[in-house]
Image 1 (tube, rainbow over the protein chains, first blue to last red):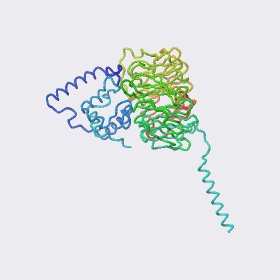
Image 2: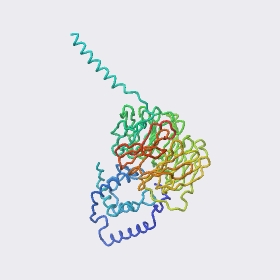
Image 3: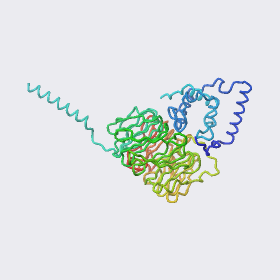
Image 4: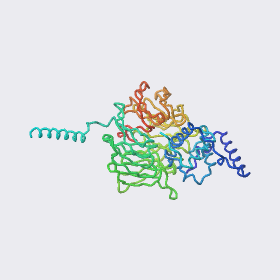
Length: 132
Length: 394
């Protein structure tokens, strides 16, 4: 995709940028010291109510760009076979911090780390449908 | 014997009238009909804007997230473009799918030609334009959006132009193309490169003259005067974000459903809580109107006196109304959760608003901003009325 000037900084506040750097450093320190990476730790499961909200958010709002069925749109497809070769930690921070230089915005204002981690886990296993 | 014959004849007559009744439904026009997408259910509701009612539903239409529709010029058929590449022709009177094909892996929308005979579909995967016969949905032309080293771009912002032409933008290739289908045996494509980075949607003005492509990758809007294409693509509103930090964009704005009111065009500012206003004579910025969130649809009431705006997540519960004389927000509505789209009745006395997460469509009186009616629908998104059939760019 063309390099997009608008999101050179990802439309990202400076504190998020700093946090990104800090998290990246922490992650690499952890892997150097042989400690388990964040995504490999057991994921806290959100409450049933929050789970419903998260499924709705992913299907409907992420779906604006990635498609309701997550088969892709202006954004790439998010099916297990599309994500298999990516690191879960990387995917989590893509969700939280966005991807500078693309249309992917940071979702951190609406999600905490555990929730992003839960979403990544679900995406890798085939994301659940919304219950009617 | 006579009695028996009488009874038999009576039955026959009753049977005959039943048959005739089935073959000839009550006479009805279609100028006040429309469809509403029930995106998760893969279904559309056929609605009547005179009676504020749902007349029926047509289902099995595939993945309708981001679905849109155009109408045949007799306003009887809706052509529905589904995310999954589905192209469906729906008969509004008989309430059936007349024909359905899956013509690509991923599509974003389409348009109908000036003479009503061609349907063009803009595809993401594989990137390009496909042209179908409006009556049979037979493929007539395939125009890949090829650029660079064998790459194919996603196609966005398609609109019809006079003369069996379609204009569209290449998201990945930063180009505007015009496909001329006046000779179906030899379609011609005119290409305008380097229009600005990442065009995300486009519109033509009501007269079919100017094409505007919104840019995601940089400030400003690419504008082509299709009456004088030799003058090339110009950049307008180039300074609207200069020196300011744009906000993250949680939903791309939509440009079709232009808001041209008088000599002014109202456009969503991407990454900003603003509606931009430009003069359609000299294309200079004339105002910026602060609004409640990042605009998604900015649509003029048919008379141009009001412009209605809905917003991206997380401000998608609001709708604001701008008075085009004072260029100020004069009213804010909270119709429901996740307002995705709005559509005016043909002359604008009412507007229909879809609230996806509340499973309803609300109908407002545009003079008093009072709610007239509310309809129950499952995750409603796009609303399309048949009056679109008679408008260039719809």
